[in-house]
Length: 359
Image (cartoon, rainbow, N blue to C red; front, side, top):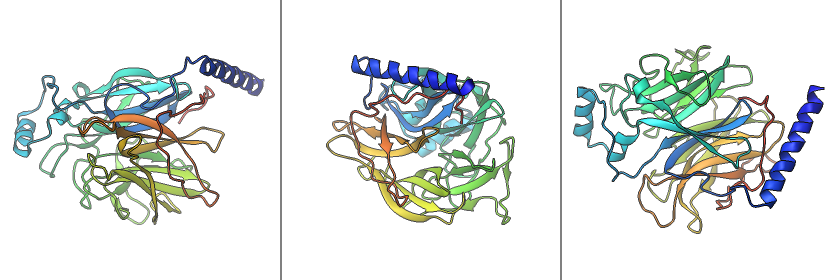
């Protein structure tokens, strides 16, 4: 009975979506939401798609009053931090039932709820464990182990927050293997083990997390911070598993430049070894510039995949002016990822989820 009801719900949703699309009521276009956002991560929680991005405002806009500690203010002045970083003190999120309609959820995490974080709050990554939602993030753009910051984790009872600091300190607050502790990505394998990939400054590490996500554990070979840096890596690691193959993806080039792009490698396990395969996403001067820092979602029960990424308008040269876009991502018969075509149309057919789908 439940299967029949689910099928009826899916059929009704698809019929309704098709009717709305034919009536021109759906907004199927890139960028998918208004405003400046970057580093989008897409997840499926409680029967909806969720996107958690970095806020990326115009650096010329005055920042709100900060709550920097004296040391953080000194570090910021000494390092001449980009003005836009001072305004990155929160995360908004966006939810959708079908990849077409998007609802904004304001300030799902704010540094007011993270005592050690002050600015440069970047690149969130979310996961659900035992009915609670955990949001990993980087903060304070630390440049050495003498500064407070790095990768933290916050928790909420709902995917829309509010998220609050889970540890009272960074989970990873120091440099290991030369990797700046930024751009976390949390990945749960089929056996239930959870891994955290992260790293800037052209180094990528992977760590294993405890069941409660509160500590870093050793890998079977005795290492803790395992470096898996592929050739060309800069930042923004992301991992998927398809047909037994692990795909490690990352961003290359400069985040404000024309060479920003997404490349990938494949391997037999969550920690590799990984073999680089090539570039799958790059700017198209007929559509948009600076395409990169992505995430990927698989529609449950299918082999349909979508890549979510940020890019800059053709007529805009401000690095912070980034927008979120979505495109289909396809695989060749041999398992390689085909180059992604940038479009202004985005998702043109609604992809509703069953209510029980959750990741």
